[in-house]
Length: 575
Image (cartoon, rainbow, N blue to C red; front, side, top):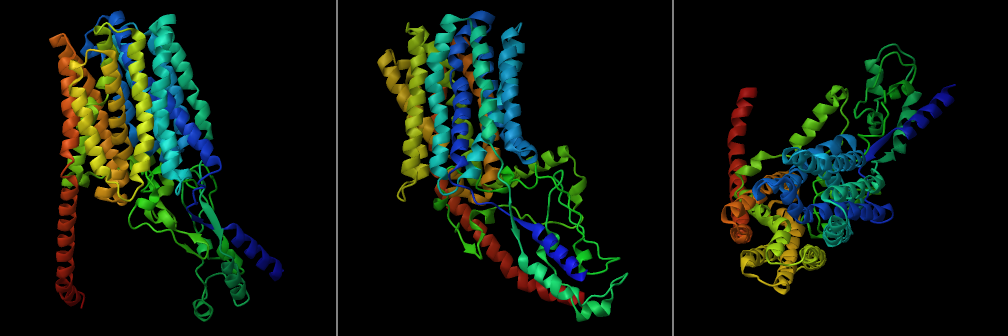
């Protein structure tokens, strides 16, 4: 009888395991995830980048001003970007796949229903807010999943995934122009909404990675060795426990998740033998808390090679993998965890709060870089939105206006790959590349009103596509270099929020200026100036970061010097 109980103890112990972060596969199904992420970028940015072709149709149909009509594109892009932190919180709670599916369906409904809009206001809500929210809920999970499935090959995999953005612009521009010729803008939106709905199929590949569960076999041996020493009792015999101590075993504190709750309760009373000590109430559901959460990994938004991150070493002890997971949150199990009664809304709210660290607003480094990103995104979408209409004013054909957007897409794709290759070199300076790209893009955009031929506009499209590719590709890398990997998630959330707000106001202001002047000259002047300022503002950024780091070191040293002086006083008080 005792032997069977001992065996049951061992069996229970083998089933109770400790959670450990999984090793990203760096291949296998990860390549399917990468392709799916590529297709999501293809669909999302393909639609966003070709809004300028629809813009001229909306102007003619609704008869509103350029400033108000451009709200369609600005709200679409602004909602898509600024919802990033909210989407991350939902991914934490419900998983990337579910969130992306909901986003795909939402975007489809927004684009399909907006074709029945009786006026521009309803159109702005459905096309802009609903469609943009759907895109936001699709796009972020696709990027996050690539980060989960790849570590050593992350830079390469992420490069493939984000290339969908440029390819989408290249394909959707002539496709949209063709559809507008064959059908009205309403029919075009029906077809585009159907294409967006295909994103729901692609995101089905976003399988969650489950935490590894490691059995601690030594624990069962310790329990069996002490089992015979304990006799039946109704309450703990303290003398007996002193002679034969009960070893604390990690597997007793093992966690099996249920309904997102972490709970492990050990009962010690009314026990016949030590097997009763393993009477652990395990709530078991593997949908939420046993899968990884986006904000748990501080490097999840890092698009470069993890080998380039300072102070990250991959180590292995007794077969247990540590590596980059030292950056993630501790996954300790609390006895009678207070989180057990937390509802879904509060969990989403807490995840959202954790993605923001407003203490960063005290950092001069972050403020300068955040302002740079705000200025860049102010002018970012202006060429996409107004270049086709400018081509129309220059008496160019509609197909030529669409071709300019396609060229921007191709240039964007090639430049992203090239920038990724260069920044992996040890001699590369990411900040210098970013600054030069933005300033060159700003100067060439400022000069757009002086371009009077299709050939020159083609050259401009190539340069502009390359400049914005460098900016987008290097955001996370620059933030890690300047502020550290530990602050990447929080900094990225605030930066994306700034970019979303800037996207909301950039195109409408530019369109309003065009309404007042009757030309697009001042529109492109404004876009060029803001982009150039975004690059110039970052020139002293590395020196500012070093100065800030030095100030932090001095403050920490002063605090350490004050600690010995305070300790005797504390000792006197305790005595």
